[in-house]
Amino acid sequence: MKNFKTVIAIDSFKGSLSSIDAGEIVDRAFHQIFPDSKSVVYPIADGGEGTVDALTRGLGGKIVNVEVTDPLGQKIQSRYGLVKDLAIIEMADSSGLTLVPVGKRNPLNTTTFGLGELILHAARESGAREFLIGIGGSATNDLGIGMLSALSHGEILFGRDLENLDKNFELDPILRDCSFKIACDVDNPLTGANGCSAIYAPQKGATPEIVQKMDSWIEKFSRKFSTESVAGDGAAGGLGFAFRVFLDAKLIPGINLVLDTIGIDRDLRDADILVTGEGRIDFQTSMGKAPVGIAARAKDLNPKILTIGFCGSVGDGSEEVNSHGIDAFFPILRSISTLEDAMDKKNAEQNLYSTSLQVFRLISKI
Image 1 (cartoon, helix red, strand yellow):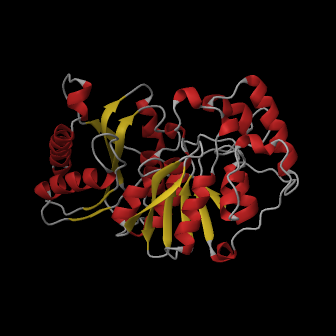
Image 2 (cartoon, helix red, strand yellow):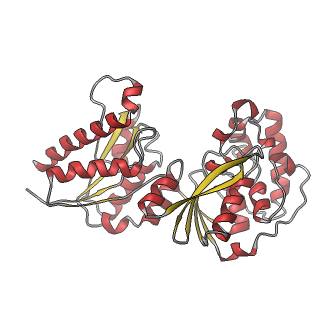
Image 3 (cartoon, one colour):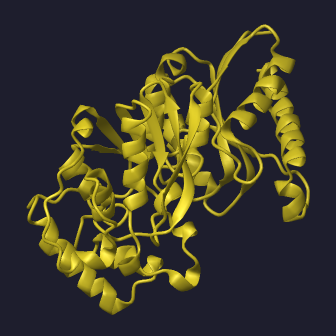
């Protein structure tokens, strides 16, 4: 029986299995069939929910809990990951839409101040000098002025404060020694028909009137600091602009940033098999989500590699992933099931393990 080198890098099955848990289950099945083969398990995420947990655990770091300001200006418990001098932050954990009750959603009344508090705590209290920050899922459209005010030890600023704001932000000097990489999968400009106010603010509670006002305010205030507009400036209600202009940050597609951080290329180059996946594979998967991101990279580095995907279920357009680097994919649910049973962690573990065994048995006969 041939010995294989296998790289296992699976995104979380949300609500059931973490990235590391899923990877370790597949790893056990692999060694059941190929006991003398080599394998390596990597944690992955696409910069959104689960990135802090996956990368912090996978890279041997720790979670730091911090009290910060939520989008409405109230105090909440938030967190970030710390791996040596690298801080891993999810913006949504301090300034996310899910933190705001539906009836209170209005980008005039939300702030990114808590994100600034997380960054400053990581730099000043934990010694972080490198930052990986995912900015998806925001409740805000404040051009990052809340974050910038926190980084300047200033007062809480909300989206509504953009209307008459005339301010230069004097950021804490410690930030000069820090570098920022932002996981950003949005390429919207800052203003206009495709800008942050027009495209995303309605999802955050903005009326057409609010959209028009905020677009005008953002245009006016941003021009004090930069007349250049680049793709991604409109991400997370203008946070892309704030990071680029004030913190000299690099905006990078989320999965690419994560893959670079974990250093997976060194193992992909000589691997025979890549196993990846996520909770559901459908048309959205092929639009830059983690499984196709890593599969495409694997094929670029090593065209002969066999790429396999596992998922909880499949949806419309799932076949598109075959043209984005995934050679074959397999749902782990093989019979009719209730959603509750399908999401049960023990059931998910057993289903993933048994499906992995079946697939590796097939490979052993090649």
